[in-house]
Image (spheres, rainbow, N blue to C red):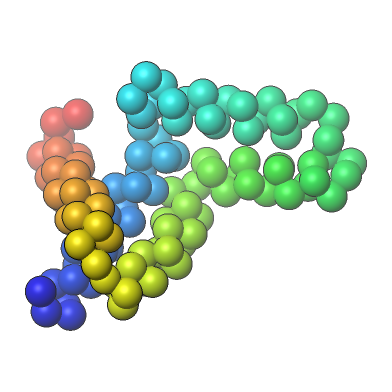
Length: 110
């Protein structure tokens, strides 16, 4: 795969992963549960400690597709250069899902 194609595929994979974490429910509601747990931990009175501040910032970041996208882009930048069959499979799998998500959104089918 040439560099431009690999970059586009990685971008689609990051898009899908970020959208999945922030917006989607996930299988068995796993992402909803994770966001709920993070929100409860943030509101449990830990806000006055350093740990509470970090948890609050993580929760705020988890509600922003662009923030999560940046975090995953950092990970995928390593996968972009240090490729193997497992990372290639994960990237292509998520990229196909990302392209499907883009097409479904643009065509108005959700």
